[in-house]
Every structure is written in C-alpha cells, then in structure tokens.
Length: 186
Image (cartoon, rainbow, N blue to C red; front, side, top):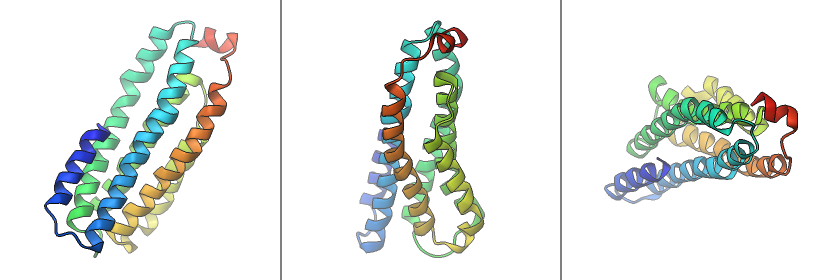
C-alpha cells in the first residue's frame, strides 16, 4: 500500500508547478510514506516474524495479529495518502478541522495498528509507537494554528523518529527468544 501511495503522490506532484512550496510538500509527503514503510518492515514485520516463529500456536497468533491490526494499518495508509493529496493541493494557508484530522489521524491509526500488532504478537507495548501516538495527539490543540505544510511536516517528523527509534527497539526485542511462558500464552 505504501508503494501505491508514493505513486499517487508522485503522479499528483508531476501535474503541479514545481516551485519551492510544492517541492517541500512533496518532500514532506514522501518522507512520511517512507517512514511508514520503514516502521512496518524494520519493526513490525521483523518482530512479528520472530515472535510468531517462536509461538506455541503460530497460526492462531498470526491470525489474530494480521486479521485485525492490519485493517488499522491500511486505514492509516489510505488516510495518509488523502493527507498527501490535500497537502499537495493546498500546502499553505488556513487548515480546517477535517484536513487536520486526516493529517494526524492517518499516521495515528497507522501507529496504533503497529502497536496493537506487537501487543498481540510479542506481548509488549512498543514505546516508539506509543510515544508517536501521544506526540500526534499532542499536536491536536495546535493543528488549527499551523499551515497544512507545517502540520504534515510535524506528523512526518513523528513518523521518522518512530522509525529510527523503532529500528533500535526491534533489534533489541528480536535478540530475545520468547520464554516458554510466552510461547504457552500465545
């Protein structure tokens, strides 16, 4: 899904006049999408594979994790793609409540889906994802005061921080072999 989002964003960007504002909007959109891709493959997928492979009933754990949490991931990616379209169309000026909700809600749903996935699979609440959700929530009161470019840049920055922190988090977590108690709970 992130690949399709990049293609749609790129196609929209190609139709616009290339100036510093549209280039900045494209860079912000691209950075957020790459960060979501990085979060998934460097943290969520890696931890999921490791813990599902060590589970007593890997089929049940995988069904629980992939069936429900990926709906949130997909919804977050779709909302983020809508956010990118809105950003490219109107990077400056006033931001309305719907645009702010999409710009913060997309990354928020995405991080929440990753958080729940890892809670189901590894029985941990990943601090990078939790902190990311909290940081996005902290932006809500200020969203109406920011331009679409600044709000989207702030949300993308949160995703980039989560992706870097999440990579280190997953490395530490995947060095652990789940205990026998964890394997029996799964």
